[in-house]
Amino acid sequence: MVRRPGVSTLGCLVPLLVLAVVAYFGYPAGEAYFKFYQYKDAMGQEARFASTVTDEHIRRRLVALADSLHMPTGAELVSIERTPGTVTISAEYDEIIRLPFNKEKVITFRPWVRSRL
Image (cartoon, rainbow, N blue to C red; front, side, top):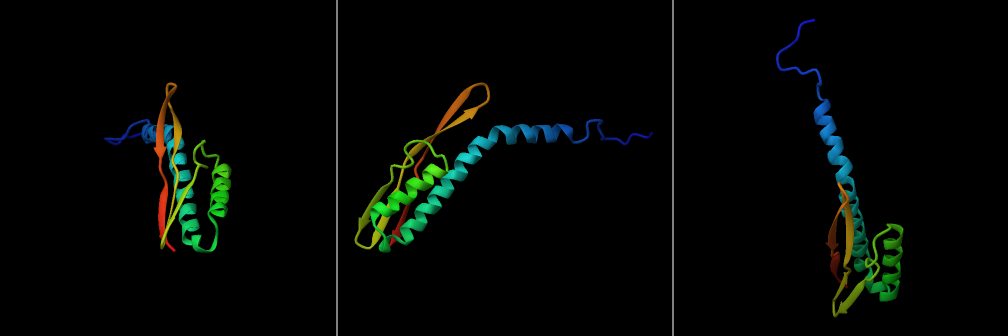
């Protein structure tokens, strides 16, 4: 068997292993950001149709979404402010990301949207 120069016996095993480790430890952070963007998108949708529904209806729908996404405590505390011609919907919550070696990182998310009525 003739060996070609520059070819290792491990092939691409090491880069795949590194990619797997990064994906394994990066998944919780990615999941937290994905939920944040889903929640913010729902806020935007509620703000677009705010002229036809009450604040309590908007709040109930966003609380139900936060519950179904298994978001942390605080995400259901939605603030809705109406001014002549605009509506602003916002919330603030902390997500705890578990890191290797029993470490934790707290990320504060502040989704908010503003829309014209």
